[in-house]
Image 1 (cartoon, rainbow, N blue to C red):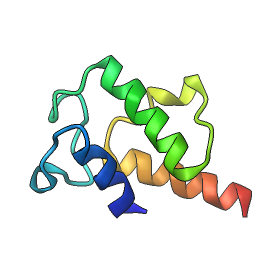
Image 2 (cartoon, helix red, strand yellow; image 1 turned 60 degrees about the vertical axis):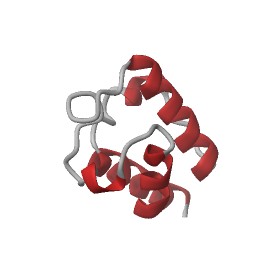
Image 3 (cartoon, rainbow, N blue to C red; image 1 turned 180 degrees about the vertical axis):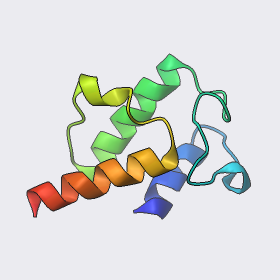
Image 4 (cartoon, rainbow, N blue to C red; image 1 turned 30 degrees about the horizontal axis):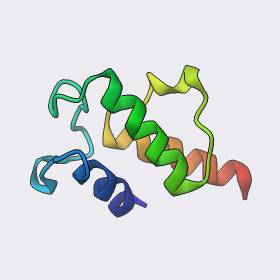
Length: 77
């Protein structure tokens, strides 16, 4: 799962070497709000889930995304 998310981040031109679990998408990677929306859409497509608007702002680091995806998978299992 982590590799799949990192691969998505790399599509934004982010070098894999600059991505850690605590890398903040806006602060550390310079992603703006449009990038964030695009990231959410790609995550939804890649993992076959729907991320409600109210959850978008919770997903600011790689660890946030991984925790969210794990919870979603557990809820649907």
